[in-house]
Amino acid sequence: MEGPVMRAVDRLVPGMSTVTRYLRYHSMYAAIAAHAEQNAWDSIACRRSVRRSEVLLAALQHHAGTDLEWLAHGVDRVRRYCGEELELARAADEEQLSQSYSPRRWGFWDQYGGPAMVLGTVDVRDGALRPGRHLCPAEVRELFAPLLSLAGRDVVSFADLETAGQAAPGVPCPAERKWLTEVLTATHSGGTHVPGDWEASDRTRRATLRILGRAIDLRGHEGYGYQETLRSAVAFGEEATTDPVLATIPETAGWRGVLLRHYSVGAWRRLWAALVAGVGSKDGEADRSAEELRDWLADQAPDADVRRTLDDLPPLKGAEGQLLPVERCILAQGAQLPMTNVLLLMVGALRSREGHLPADVRAVFLGRQRQWAEFLDPTWVDGLINDYLDRRVGDLAARLVDDMLAQSRRVALAKLRTDPATGGLKIFSRLHLRNERYFKTGDEGDSDLGTRIPQLGFFAEQLGLFTVRDSCHTVTAEGRRILETNP
Image 1 (tube, rainbow, N blue to C red):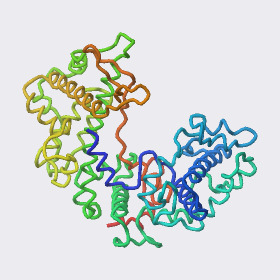
Image 2: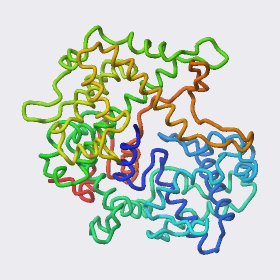
Image 3: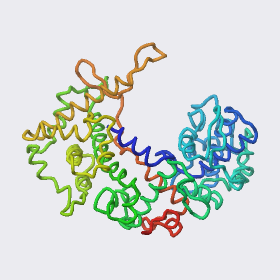
Image 4: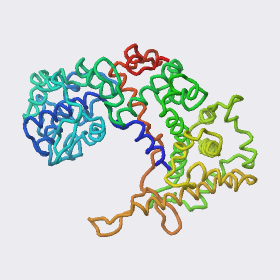
Protein backbone atom coordinates (compact mmCIF):
# COMPACT_ATOMS: atom_id res chain seq x y z
CA MET A 1 0.00 0.00 0.00
CA GLU A 2 2.70 2.50 1.00
CA GLY A 3 5.54 0.97 -0.98
CA PRO A 4 5.01 2.81 -4.30
CA VAL A 5 5.11 6.24 -2.63
CA MET A 6 8.07 5.36 -0.41
CA ARG A 7 10.08 3.97 -3.33
CA ALA A 8 9.35 7.01 -5.50
CA VAL A 9 10.26 9.43 -2.70
CA ASP A 10 13.53 7.56 -2.13
CA ARG A 11 14.32 8.08 -5.78
CA LEU A 12 13.16 11.69 -6.07
CA VAL A 13 14.65 13.13 -2.85
CA PRO A 14 17.97 11.31 -2.33
CA GLY A 15 19.90 12.38 0.74
CA MET A 16 16.84 13.50 2.70
CA SER A 17 14.74 11.85 5.40
CA THR A 18 11.61 12.78 7.28
CA VAL A 19 13.47 12.95 10.62
CA THR A 20 16.39 15.23 9.70
CA ARG A 21 15.98 18.82 10.86
CA TYR A 22 19.13 20.89 10.91
CA LEU A 23 21.95 21.34 8.43
CA ARG A 24 24.15 22.00 11.46
CA TYR A 25 24.11 18.29 12.28
CA HIS A 26 25.34 17.39 8.79
CA SER A 27 28.21 19.84 9.29
CA MET A 28 29.02 18.43 12.71
CA TYR A 29 29.15 14.83 11.54
CA ALA A 30 31.39 15.85 8.62
CA ALA A 31 33.73 17.64 11.06
CA ILE A 32 33.79 14.57 13.31
CA ALA A 33 34.61 12.38 10.28
CA ALA A 34 37.51 14.64 9.33
CA HIS A 35 38.80 14.62 12.91
CA ALA A 36 38.38 10.84 13.07
CA GLU A 37 40.50 10.30 9.96
CA GLN A 38 43.19 12.68 11.21
CA ASN A 39 43.41 10.81 14.52
CA ALA A 40 42.82 7.29 13.12
CA TRP A 41 39.77 6.75 15.33
CA ASP A 42 38.04 3.38 15.23
CA SER A 43 34.29 2.87 15.42
CA ILE A 44 34.26 2.97 19.24
CA ALA A 45 36.02 6.34 19.37
CA CYS A 46 33.78 7.68 16.62
CA ARG A 47 30.64 6.59 18.44
CA ARG A 48 31.78 8.23 21.67
CA SER A 49 32.54 11.49 19.86
CA VAL A 50 29.19 11.43 18.07
CA ARG A 51 27.22 10.85 21.25
CA ARG A 52 29.09 13.45 23.28
CA SER A 53 28.96 16.04 20.49
CA GLU A 54 25.21 15.59 20.17
CA VAL A 55 24.83 16.13 23.92
CA LEU A 56 26.97 19.27 23.73
CA LEU A 57 24.88 20.63 20.86
CA ALA A 58 21.69 20.12 22.88
CA ALA A 59 23.29 21.59 26.01
CA LEU A 60 24.35 24.68 24.06
CA GLN A 61 20.80 25.35 23.06
CA HIS A 62 19.47 24.65 26.55
CA HIS A 63 22.06 26.92 28.18
CA ALA A 64 21.46 29.75 25.72
CA GLY A 65 17.69 29.40 25.92
CA THR A 66 17.50 29.78 22.14
CA ASP A 67 13.94 29.73 20.83
CA LEU A 68 14.09 27.93 17.49
CA GLU A 69 11.29 26.45 15.42
CA TRP A 70 12.67 22.98 16.18
CA LEU A 71 14.57 22.03 19.31
CA ALA A 72 17.98 20.41 19.11
CA HIS A 73 17.80 16.62 19.16
CA GLY A 74 17.67 15.22 22.68
CA VAL A 75 17.49 18.59 24.43
CA ASP A 76 14.65 17.50 26.73
CA ARG A 77 16.66 14.56 28.08
CA VAL A 78 19.92 16.52 28.26
CA ARG A 79 18.33 19.07 30.63
CA ARG A 80 18.42 16.60 33.53
CA TYR A 81 22.22 16.52 33.30
CA CYS A 82 22.57 20.30 33.39
CA GLY A 83 23.05 21.20 37.05
CA GLU A 84 25.94 23.36 38.16
CA GLU A 85 27.88 21.73 35.32
CA LEU A 86 27.08 19.53 32.35
CA GLU A 87 27.57 15.89 33.30
CA LEU A 88 28.67 14.97 29.80
CA ALA A 89 29.81 11.38 30.41
CA ARG A 90 26.56 10.49 32.18
CA ALA A 91 24.39 12.19 29.59
CA ALA A 92 26.15 10.35 26.75
CA ASP A 93 26.58 7.06 28.64
CA GLU A 94 27.34 4.32 26.11
CA GLU A 95 26.44 1.43 28.41
CA GLN A 96 23.24 2.55 30.15
CA LEU A 97 21.57 3.75 26.97
CA SER A 98 18.09 3.97 28.49
CA GLN A 99 19.43 6.39 31.09
CA SER A 100 21.24 8.58 28.55
CA TYR A 101 20.10 11.31 26.18
CA SER A 102 19.34 8.70 23.46
CA PRO A 103 18.58 4.95 23.62
CA ARG A 104 20.24 4.45 20.22
CA ARG A 105 23.85 3.27 20.28
CA TRP A 106 24.87 5.92 17.76
CA GLY A 107 22.43 8.57 18.97
CA PHE A 108 20.91 10.70 16.24
CA TRP A 109 23.58 9.72 13.73
CA ASP A 110 21.22 6.78 13.11
CA GLN A 111 18.82 9.30 11.53
CA TYR A 112 21.38 11.40 9.68
CA GLY A 113 23.84 8.68 8.69
CA GLY A 114 22.04 7.32 5.63
CA PRO A 115 21.28 10.77 4.19
CA ALA A 116 24.84 11.98 4.95
CA MET A 117 26.35 9.09 3.01
CA VAL A 118 24.03 9.72 0.06
CA LEU A 119 24.89 13.43 0.15
CA GLY A 120 28.56 12.47 0.26
CA THR A 121 29.42 14.54 3.33
CA VAL A 122 30.41 11.48 5.41
CA ASP A 123 31.49 7.94 4.62
CA VAL A 124 31.68 4.89 6.89
CA ARG A 125 34.58 2.47 6.62
CA ASP A 126 34.99 -0.49 8.97
CA GLY A 127 32.30 1.05 11.16
CA ALA A 128 34.22 4.32 11.60
CA LEU A 129 33.26 7.74 10.27
CA ARG A 130 35.47 9.06 7.50
CA PRO A 131 35.23 12.04 5.11
CA GLY A 132 32.85 11.63 2.19
CA ARG A 133 33.40 12.61 -1.44
CA HIS A 134 32.55 16.23 -0.53
CA LEU A 135 35.31 17.11 1.93
CA CYS A 136 34.41 19.21 4.94
CA PRO A 137 36.02 22.67 4.46
CA ALA A 138 38.67 23.84 6.91
CA GLU A 139 36.46 26.73 8.10
CA VAL A 140 33.68 24.29 9.03
CA ARG A 141 36.12 22.01 10.85
CA GLU A 142 37.31 25.06 12.81
CA LEU A 143 33.72 25.91 13.69
CA PHE A 144 33.42 22.62 15.57
CA ALA A 145 36.97 22.41 16.95
CA PRO A 146 36.07 23.81 20.41
CA LEU A 147 33.07 21.47 20.66
CA LEU A 148 35.11 18.39 19.69
CA SER A 149 37.74 19.38 22.25
CA LEU A 150 35.11 19.53 24.99
CA ALA A 151 33.79 16.10 23.90
CA GLY A 152 36.89 14.54 25.46
CA ARG A 153 35.83 15.61 28.96
CA ASP A 154 33.52 13.84 31.40
CA VAL A 155 32.23 17.07 32.97
CA VAL A 156 31.99 20.47 31.27
CA SER A 157 31.44 23.80 33.02
CA PHE A 158 29.00 26.17 31.38
CA ALA A 159 31.73 28.77 31.10
CA ASP A 160 33.73 26.30 28.99
CA LEU A 161 30.61 25.30 27.09
CA GLU A 162 30.21 28.90 25.94
CA THR A 163 33.56 28.67 24.13
CA ALA A 164 31.84 26.31 21.68
CA GLY A 165 28.84 28.59 21.28
CA GLN A 166 29.50 29.23 17.60
CA ALA A 167 28.50 25.61 16.92
CA ALA A 168 25.05 25.95 18.53
CA PRO A 169 22.02 25.11 16.32
CA GLY A 170 21.03 28.09 14.24
CA VAL A 171 21.73 29.84 10.97
CA PRO A 172 24.68 28.25 9.14
CA CYS A 173 27.87 30.29 9.07
CA PRO A 174 29.01 31.62 5.65
CA ALA A 175 31.50 28.81 4.94
CA GLU A 176 29.01 26.18 6.07
CA ARG A 177 26.24 27.69 3.95
CA LYS A 178 28.46 27.89 0.86
CA TRP A 179 29.60 24.28 1.19
CA LEU A 180 26.19 22.76 1.87
CA THR A 181 24.52 24.87 -0.81
CA GLU A 182 26.94 23.38 -3.32
CA VAL A 183 26.28 19.86 -2.02
CA LEU A 184 22.47 20.10 -1.94
CA THR A 185 22.07 21.96 -5.23
CA ALA A 186 24.84 20.15 -7.15
CA THR A 187 26.65 23.36 -8.02
CA HIS A 188 30.23 24.58 -7.95
CA SER A 189 31.41 27.82 -6.41
CA GLY A 190 29.38 30.64 -7.91
CA GLY A 191 26.29 28.50 -8.40
CA THR A 192 27.19 26.80 -11.68
CA HIS A 193 25.73 23.37 -12.35
CA VAL A 194 27.75 21.05 -14.60
CA PRO A 195 25.74 17.79 -14.84
CA GLY A 196 28.71 15.57 -15.65
CA ASP A 197 30.48 16.59 -12.45
CA TRP A 198 27.76 15.14 -10.23
CA GLU A 199 26.29 11.75 -9.45
CA ALA A 200 22.77 10.77 -10.52
CA SER A 201 21.45 11.22 -6.96
CA ASP A 202 22.84 14.77 -6.86
CA ARG A 203 21.20 15.66 -10.18
CA THR A 204 17.87 14.22 -9.05
CA ARG A 205 17.93 16.13 -5.76
CA ARG A 206 18.73 19.32 -7.66
CA ALA A 207 15.82 18.65 -10.02
CA THR A 208 13.43 18.29 -7.07
CA LEU A 209 14.74 21.51 -5.53
CA ARG A 210 14.23 23.30 -8.85
CA ILE A 211 10.67 21.95 -9.10
CA LEU A 212 9.92 23.08 -5.54
CA GLY A 213 11.48 26.48 -6.19
CA ARG A 214 9.47 26.98 -9.36
CA ALA A 215 6.30 25.85 -7.56
CA ILE A 216 6.97 28.52 -4.95
CA ASP A 217 7.42 31.13 -7.68
CA LEU A 218 4.07 30.12 -9.14
CA ARG A 219 2.02 29.29 -6.04
CA GLY A 220 3.94 30.39 -2.94
CA HIS A 221 1.56 33.32 -2.44
CA GLU A 222 -1.32 30.93 -1.66
CA GLY A 223 -0.11 30.45 1.91
CA TYR A 224 0.28 26.67 1.87
CA GLY A 225 3.23 24.77 3.29
CA TYR A 226 5.95 23.43 1.02
CA GLN A 227 4.18 20.17 0.19
CA GLU A 228 0.84 21.72 -0.69
CA THR A 229 2.54 24.49 -2.67
CA LEU A 230 4.26 21.80 -4.72
CA ARG A 231 0.96 19.97 -5.12
CA SER A 232 -0.78 23.13 -6.35
CA ALA A 233 1.73 23.65 -9.13
CA VAL A 234 2.49 20.06 -10.07
CA ALA A 235 -0.41 17.73 -9.20
CA PHE A 236 -3.27 19.88 -10.44
CA GLY A 237 -3.83 22.34 -13.25
CA GLU A 238 -1.76 22.50 -16.40
CA GLU A 239 1.50 24.09 -15.22
CA ALA A 240 3.32 20.75 -14.96
CA THR A 241 3.14 20.47 -18.75
CA THR A 242 2.96 24.10 -19.89
CA ASP A 243 5.28 26.01 -17.57
CA PRO A 244 8.62 26.67 -19.33
CA VAL A 245 10.59 25.48 -16.30
CA LEU A 246 8.50 22.62 -14.90
CA ALA A 247 7.82 21.10 -18.30
CA THR A 248 11.54 20.73 -19.01
CA ILE A 249 12.35 18.79 -15.82
CA PRO A 250 11.65 15.04 -16.21
CA GLU A 251 11.13 14.58 -12.47
CA THR A 252 8.04 16.81 -12.60
CA ALA A 253 5.98 13.88 -13.91
CA GLY A 254 7.26 11.72 -11.05
CA TRP A 255 6.16 14.24 -8.46
CA ARG A 256 2.73 14.53 -10.05
CA GLY A 257 2.30 10.77 -9.79
CA VAL A 258 3.60 10.64 -6.21
CA LEU A 259 1.46 13.48 -4.90
CA LEU A 260 -1.71 12.09 -6.46
CA ARG A 261 -1.07 8.57 -5.15
CA HIS A 262 -0.28 10.09 -1.75
CA TYR A 263 -4.00 10.83 -1.31
CA SER A 264 -4.93 7.15 -1.59
CA VAL A 265 -2.17 6.07 0.79
CA GLY A 266 -3.29 8.65 3.34
CA ALA A 267 -6.90 7.51 3.00
CA TRP A 268 -5.98 3.88 3.72
CA ARG A 269 -3.87 4.92 6.73
CA ARG A 270 -6.68 6.98 8.26
CA LEU A 271 -9.30 4.29 7.60
CA TRP A 272 -7.14 1.62 9.22
CA ALA A 273 -6.32 3.82 12.21
CA ALA A 274 -10.01 4.59 12.72
CA LEU A 275 -10.93 0.92 12.50
CA VAL A 276 -8.29 -0.10 15.07
CA ALA A 277 -9.25 2.81 17.35
CA GLY A 278 -12.71 1.28 17.74
CA VAL A 279 -11.37 -2.07 18.90
CA GLY A 280 -10.67 -2.80 22.57
CA SER A 281 -7.79 -4.60 24.26
CA LYS A 282 -7.76 -8.33 25.03
CA ASP A 283 -8.72 -7.60 28.65
CA GLY A 284 -11.62 -5.28 27.83
CA GLU A 285 -15.13 -5.71 26.51
CA ALA A 286 -14.70 -3.88 23.22
CA ASP A 287 -13.21 -6.65 21.13
CA ARG A 288 -14.94 -6.85 17.76
CA SER A 289 -15.96 -9.49 15.26
CA ALA A 290 -15.29 -9.02 11.56
CA GLU A 291 -19.02 -8.50 11.04
CA GLU A 292 -19.11 -5.71 13.64
CA LEU A 293 -16.18 -4.00 11.97
CA ARG A 294 -17.85 -4.26 8.56
CA ASP A 295 -21.00 -2.72 10.02
CA TRP A 296 -18.95 0.08 11.59
CA LEU A 297 -17.96 1.42 8.18
CA ALA A 298 -21.02 0.33 6.21
CA ASP A 299 -23.37 2.16 8.61
CA GLN A 300 -21.56 5.45 7.83
CA ALA A 301 -22.02 5.10 4.08
CA PRO A 302 -24.62 7.21 2.24
CA ASP A 303 -27.92 5.64 1.23
CA ALA A 304 -27.01 5.41 -2.43
CA ASP A 305 -25.45 2.97 -4.86
CA VAL A 306 -21.86 3.23 -6.05
CA ARG A 307 -22.82 4.42 -9.52
CA ARG A 308 -24.73 7.41 -8.17
CA THR A 309 -21.97 8.24 -5.70
CA LEU A 310 -19.48 8.36 -8.57
CA ASP A 311 -21.82 10.57 -10.58
CA ASP A 312 -22.08 12.97 -7.64
CA LEU A 313 -18.31 13.49 -7.48
CA PRO A 314 -17.01 16.82 -8.82
CA PRO A 315 -15.34 16.55 -12.26
CA LEU A 316 -11.79 15.22 -12.12
CA LYS A 317 -10.75 17.16 -15.21
CA GLY A 318 -11.48 20.60 -16.63
CA ALA A 319 -12.63 21.45 -20.13
CA GLU A 320 -9.04 21.63 -21.36
CA GLY A 321 -8.10 18.32 -19.76
CA GLN A 322 -6.32 19.78 -16.73
CA LEU A 323 -6.57 17.84 -13.46
CA LEU A 324 -8.88 19.47 -10.94
CA PRO A 325 -8.25 19.31 -7.16
CA VAL A 326 -11.16 17.02 -6.32
CA GLU A 327 -9.16 15.42 -3.50
CA ARG A 328 -8.80 18.78 -1.77
CA CYS A 329 -12.54 19.38 -2.00
CA ILE A 330 -13.26 15.98 -0.46
CA LEU A 331 -10.74 16.47 2.35
CA ALA A 332 -12.40 19.78 3.21
CA GLN A 333 -15.34 17.70 4.46
CA GLY A 334 -13.14 16.34 7.25
CA ALA A 335 -10.10 14.11 6.85
CA GLN A 336 -11.03 12.01 9.91
CA LEU A 337 -14.48 11.09 8.59
CA PRO A 338 -14.29 7.48 7.35
CA MET A 339 -16.44 8.17 4.27
CA THR A 340 -14.15 11.04 3.27
CA ASN A 341 -11.42 8.46 2.91
CA VAL A 342 -13.61 5.99 1.06
CA LEU A 343 -14.37 8.75 -1.46
CA LEU A 344 -10.64 9.50 -1.78
CA LEU A 345 -10.01 5.85 -2.59
CA MET A 346 -12.72 6.00 -5.25
CA VAL A 347 -11.16 9.10 -6.81
CA GLY A 348 -7.78 7.38 -6.81
CA ALA A 349 -9.35 4.44 -8.62
CA LEU A 350 -10.80 6.74 -11.29
CA ARG A 351 -7.43 8.44 -11.75
CA SER A 352 -5.79 5.04 -12.28
CA ARG A 353 -7.83 4.34 -15.41
CA GLU A 354 -6.04 4.15 -18.73
CA GLY A 355 -5.89 7.56 -20.41
CA HIS A 356 -6.68 9.69 -17.38
CA LEU A 357 -3.03 10.46 -16.58
CA PRO A 358 -0.11 10.81 -19.02
CA ALA A 359 1.84 7.56 -19.32
CA ASP A 360 4.90 8.80 -17.40
CA VAL A 361 2.72 10.13 -14.57
CA ARG A 362 0.58 7.00 -14.44
CA ALA A 363 3.67 4.78 -14.19
CA VAL A 364 4.74 6.53 -10.98
CA PHE A 365 1.15 6.82 -9.72
CA LEU A 366 0.75 3.03 -9.92
CA GLY A 367 4.35 2.33 -8.89
CA ARG A 368 3.95 -1.35 -9.53
CA GLN A 369 6.60 -3.98 -9.13
CA ARG A 370 4.37 -6.29 -11.17
CA GLN A 371 2.31 -5.76 -14.32
CA TRP A 372 -1.05 -6.42 -12.73
CA ALA A 373 -3.13 -4.92 -9.94
CA GLU A 374 -1.61 -5.15 -6.48
CA PHE A 375 -3.65 -5.58 -3.34
CA LEU A 376 -5.24 -2.30 -2.19
CA ASP A 377 -3.73 -0.26 -5.02
CA PRO A 378 -5.98 2.12 -7.03
CA THR A 379 -6.60 -0.42 -9.80
CA TRP A 380 -7.64 -2.95 -7.16
CA VAL A 381 -10.16 -0.44 -5.82
CA ASP A 382 -11.29 0.24 -9.40
CA GLY A 383 -11.98 -3.46 -9.83
CA LEU A 384 -14.12 -3.39 -6.68
CA ILE A 385 -15.97 -0.35 -8.00
CA ASN A 386 -16.86 -2.22 -11.17
CA ASP A 387 -18.00 -5.25 -9.15
CA TYR A 388 -20.14 -3.13 -6.79
CA LEU A 389 -21.29 -0.49 -9.28
CA ASP A 390 -25.00 -1.18 -8.82
CA ARG A 391 -24.82 -2.15 -5.17
CA ARG A 392 -25.03 0.06 -2.10
CA VAL A 393 -21.97 2.06 -1.04
CA GLY A 394 -22.30 0.33 2.33
CA ASP A 395 -21.61 -3.01 0.65
CA LEU A 396 -18.43 -1.62 -0.91
CA ALA A 397 -17.42 -0.17 2.47
CA ALA A 398 -17.88 -3.55 4.14
CA ARG A 399 -15.69 -5.16 1.47
CA LEU A 400 -12.97 -2.56 2.11
CA VAL A 401 -12.96 -3.60 5.78
CA ASP A 402 -12.50 -7.24 4.79
CA ASP A 403 -9.62 -6.25 2.53
CA MET A 404 -7.93 -4.22 5.28
CA LEU A 405 -8.20 -7.09 7.74
CA ALA A 406 -6.83 -9.54 5.18
CA GLN A 407 -3.91 -7.24 4.36
CA SER A 408 -3.16 -6.79 8.06
CA ARG A 409 -2.97 -10.56 8.43
CA ARG A 410 -0.67 -10.91 5.42
CA VAL A 411 1.69 -8.22 6.68
CA ALA A 412 1.75 -9.73 10.18
CA LEU A 413 2.61 -13.19 8.84
CA ALA A 414 5.34 -11.72 6.64
CA LYS A 415 6.92 -10.17 9.74
CA LEU A 416 6.61 -13.33 11.86
CA ARG A 417 9.83 -13.92 13.79
CA THR A 418 11.16 -16.17 16.51
CA ASP A 419 11.32 -14.40 19.87
CA PRO A 420 14.81 -15.14 21.30
CA ALA A 421 13.54 -14.45 24.83
CA THR A 422 10.81 -17.10 24.77
CA GLY A 423 11.65 -19.31 21.80
CA GLY A 424 8.10 -18.81 20.56
CA LEU A 425 6.82 -16.89 17.56
CA LYS A 426 6.40 -13.15 17.74
CA ILE A 427 3.83 -11.36 15.59
CA PHE A 428 4.50 -7.68 14.90
CA SER A 429 0.94 -6.41 14.76
CA ARG A 430 -1.32 -4.24 16.87
CA LEU A 431 -4.49 -6.07 15.84
CA HIS A 432 -4.92 -9.73 16.79
CA LEU A 433 -7.61 -12.37 16.28
CA ARG A 434 -8.75 -14.66 19.08
CA ASN A 435 -11.85 -16.87 18.96
CA GLU A 436 -13.04 -15.02 15.83
CA ARG A 437 -12.89 -11.67 17.60
CA TYR A 438 -10.34 -8.89 17.14
CA PHE A 439 -8.50 -7.13 19.95
CA LYS A 440 -5.63 -4.62 19.85
CA THR A 441 -2.40 -4.09 21.72
CA GLY A 442 -2.10 -0.45 20.63
CA ASP A 443 -3.40 2.18 18.25
CA GLU A 444 -2.21 2.79 14.69
CA GLY A 445 -0.89 6.13 13.46
CA ASP A 446 -3.00 8.09 11.00
CA SER A 447 -0.49 10.70 9.91
CA ASP A 448 0.29 11.11 6.24
CA LEU A 449 3.29 9.33 4.82
CA GLY A 450 6.25 11.71 4.62
CA THR A 451 7.31 13.00 1.22
CA ARG A 452 10.45 14.76 2.61
CA ILE A 453 9.42 17.94 0.78
CA PRO A 454 8.89 19.90 4.04
CA GLN A 455 12.37 18.90 5.21
CA LEU A 456 13.91 19.82 1.86
CA GLY A 457 12.18 23.19 1.98
CA PHE A 458 13.39 23.86 5.51
CA PHE A 459 16.95 22.98 4.51
CA ALA A 460 16.65 25.43 1.61
CA GLU A 461 15.44 28.08 4.09
CA GLN A 462 18.52 27.53 6.25
CA LEU A 463 20.68 28.02 3.16
CA GLY A 464 18.90 31.25 2.23
CA LEU A 465 17.40 29.85 -0.98
CA PHE A 466 13.80 30.15 0.22
CA THR A 467 12.19 32.48 2.74
CA VAL A 468 8.81 32.76 4.45
CA ARG A 469 7.02 36.01 5.13
CA ASP A 470 3.44 36.37 6.35
CA SER A 471 2.91 32.62 5.82
CA CYS A 472 3.82 32.95 2.13
CA HIS A 473 6.87 31.29 0.60
CA THR A 474 9.22 33.01 -1.81
CA VAL A 475 12.44 32.12 -3.57
CA THR A 476 15.29 34.51 -2.85
CA ALA A 477 17.31 36.13 -5.62
CA GLU A 478 20.18 33.78 -4.80
CA GLY A 479 17.80 30.82 -4.89
CA ARG A 480 16.51 31.79 -8.34
CA ARG A 481 20.04 32.14 -9.66
CA ILE A 482 21.35 28.85 -8.25
CA LEU A 483 18.23 26.79 -8.98
CA GLU A 484 17.54 28.45 -12.32
CA THR A 485 13.84 28.89 -11.67
CA ASN A 486 13.38 31.87 -13.97
CA PRO A 487 12.01 30.94 -17.42
